[in-house]
Length: 318
Image (spheres, rainbow, N blue to C red):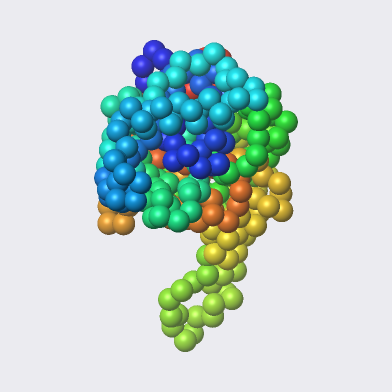
């Protein structure tokens, strides 16, 4: 990471974008980061607008709309002293978001989880999921909730519990370190969760499904307890094993335990790509809870370096 952190906040002019802007502003203020506020004009959408509404939007018109949206988001309480840049791109939203993140050297992408309705949703509805599948930097996804200006002290009051769903892979240790650091900074409790998903393949006649599930739970529980022992002693942590569909169980736990932040990994597979990208997106659709999604880049080769205090924000291998 460079000497100054960089945050990218893509905007689709939805209510979720307003929430994302407030989170991005809070992160940028606390870590003295610069923010790039981005909107992407889809060529096909622009053509449709030209047929319906007249001449296609020019970049200047889009930037004017973007600045107006930013100003209205903070009209009740102005944003903190943050260095903000506005950028207009043309193309498919997800590839353009990832391109700008690379070119700007973004350390974090902050974006909303639910876009607009109607024709615009066709272009933005799957953007978050596509970004999750290809990102190489952490992504903070914010649901559409009514909230004012967000400061770190506000987050400490609202985020009392951090949920970290794990799959007990090699990437889990890094995920626990990052979630523990965030829980410490927010003075929150940490809930480490493993979901045993139903076995979906035929078993030989002499093997019973209940015995298989009992064995899987018997292996998961001590592994999870061992993970909890790695959490710093001044962070209150708890282990929980659940059974069922991963996304549904995570969303249910988030609701029942009043979780304020979910930290999930996006683990890579040479054949299928990030394993949890679609699970994370489904969690976002089911639970109105902010999610920090951690990419798999360099997880196996390099240890994680996490700093969430002072003027630095680092979630990377180093």
